[in-house]
Length: 584
Image 1 (spheres, rainbow, N blue to C red):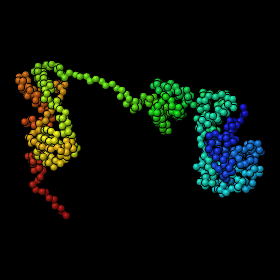
Image 2 (cartoon, one colour; image 1 turned 60 degrees about the vertical axis):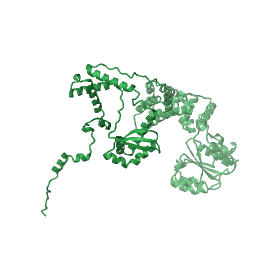
Image 3 (cartoon, rainbow, N blue to C red; image 1 turned 180 degrees about the horizontal axis):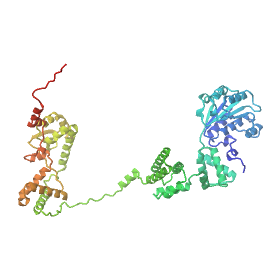
């Protein structure tokens, strides 16, 4: 085994040896074979992607005795001296250390002399973006129209720093990031030549750390060979680079997916930096996504990457690394408990319907201490049960009557949407009487302001009725004094019975003792309580002979013409006005 580092020992010497730059090597080979050469080339790309190696291969192809050719002979003096880096017609300059205008003047002076032993004189300027603006300006004329035997090859990792005048005078070749599979095959080839054992996962870790740079990857491989004593293993590589072992990552996510305890995992991760752990988890999940691991689905990947993104944002705000790491693991654990929408829908569809439990309609009343009150309430409940069982009860209506009531309610809602005031007048003044499919009969008790409002807006009312009941509907009105609206029957519960008992007792204290009253008086008391519970609606005002003040509709004109208001006006309006004369 030679003491030369792998990056130099296995440096490409032919276009066929370039790794991951097939398009560039093929283009340059065709240009050499067909003698369609440019006077200046610009190679740009990531570090360790093969820019300088390609420039030297190109220079060797131009100084070979068979030049120009894409396959140098490797046996002539020109090829041998080029491989050894001592050819007089290949001038390589580092622009990082020779970046001034004086250095460019010396280079321009060399272009005036013809090559010593070959057809071309090649100038390789590495890291050309480090030249000063004055040096670039001095190079422009020579770079645009050099002698026919002069070729320029410029190499840089940052082409954006070059002036546009330089870019326009060169053929630009962009070196891409070397794919991981090509780097892997190259490493395997080198290790087989060196007779060194290895593990595939260890090489993958080195390739990921190299980030597409072949030179960086080979440097790490050199270090791993030394650390692992000529046996590149995963444990040795992770220990050397301070990374998390992939086996530990598998164990960690097995614990997370099974909702296990992550306390031991947190203790293990305390020896790593939080940012490094987040990056390692991201890389692990990316490879599991590409491998289509059945333990994860696309929704889980999406949640995990959102959590990791939030963690990176917190670290960017100088948050405590340990806290961010604990929070991230807890969120990763909770993310596995969330259900997708499809899963929830599937669970809902699989729910078995529960049979409805039918309770008996009769209610067993608990006897009260007051026998007369209990007897009265029992009588009212029996009467209500008889009404519910009778065929003439309002709940036992035909389908046509239900549709008629629904359509009339729909008309009322449409009028409310048009105007709340108009809807109130319509509801309090009109009541559906009958409908036979063409003739709609309405009971009307409209008066005063409601009559005026309904008359002005009758066109809207007719339009709403025709929209709901049909265009051929004929509207008829019956004049009545008051509307009679049946209140809906309420189901009797124990709380209702108890409430009625309290109200009857309160009324008994105000009026007279129930024990001395007759059965008819008790029924009258119950009916009065029901009237009070109607909260002063229009129907209740039609049944009560003397409505309360809170149940009466108060007009603003009656308030203004009341004696109290007139007296207040007289007090605040003096008979004579006081005038203040100015002394000026």
